[in-house]
Image (tube, rainbow, N blue to C red; front, top):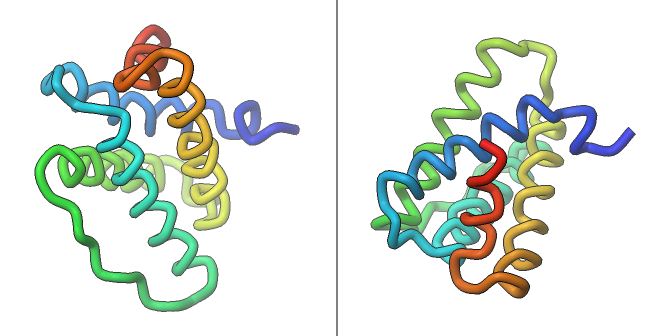
Length: 119
């Protein structure tokens, strides 16, 4: 079963948190989302390996997206206690791979405009 099918609700919650920031900040760019998602991926890679996470170097809208993702993850975990750090890492990787695909096809806000249609 694909990650997108297995964790459909979790992915939708994560993407909704990103879209919420986009709707509040229409100037948000895919590149800013990509940095936030990449930082979250790195944190979860560290958690899976049992190592300390690297210090964040985000600010502005990057940090706002990161904070929205963090809040969504905390909410997801409050409803699904069986979800592992590796499961969340897999979800984040799906989003991480999707961003450049849609940016390349649709421009600087391609991912954001694409995903906004579905959440």
